[in-house]
Image: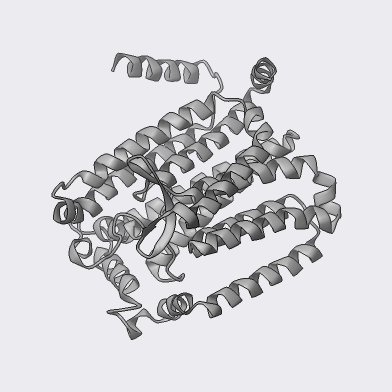
Length: 394
């Protein structure tokens, strides 16, 4: 408590004296809000299923607290580390990410019909989460080193697309169509913001759309998910079960919700209530008002992240800018898809709600990614300090 009091006093003193914050505090507090509310909702959504299956009502909450603790510790370390380390390690991290994706089909653990996890001690690690961040870091470095090639030639654009194609193939072997879609959208968004030729970009988008359509048509379960999303009430007890239960939960929340712990759907009806469909439980318990607040906070956080990237771009720090853009696109895209799935406006995908849903890999990697954005903001605000520290490190 004493240390916390000193920290708060120092923050107030800086504000009074007009000193600049170390990094974007509105973004920092919005992210902490999402983490805190996520812990509350994981406890509420999982207490019944944990009691019935494991005999320990707080099992998932305790594990999520451990994951959050690890994530915040990793974030704290990343905040103190110069971004030069990540830029110099981009290629090595990408190779390591590919090795992990290759290992998943070979020695991965199957859960709910998908092989997406590697068993590491007491935890299951999802390599796709790590790979998203590693791909963003590598591509940001590539786009800085090959700026002219990316913006003026087809080769500069197609090389990262070849890596993306290989990654998407490995992800689809798991199968993890949702992560492949988020990664593809993030990479395409980064290349667009990097100034690729619009004709080539438009052609490639059409090719990617055609490939996605072919993948959906070729796999019966994907086609079933698409048709169920379009009209889940045609088969509410089979293919449309998850979505209909999520819609019932959201509808029962009305304006102000049933109150924390008051959800009925989480008790027996809604599968994956503490992971993929956490937002539906939150909507039932906090109502439309609570749901809108969460959506606004997510939107605000994405806006602040993109603003940080824009400031880095204006300062000529292209690696920092592209990395911030990529993380912002990833964070916003995944939140948008998860919320869209819960509300029935997008097909069902196995994607968590960033910083809120239960899951160790998701929360730890996202904390690391967002800490890198805060580090970019720190180096934007204090370029001399960052430069001195980078020289001492390298």
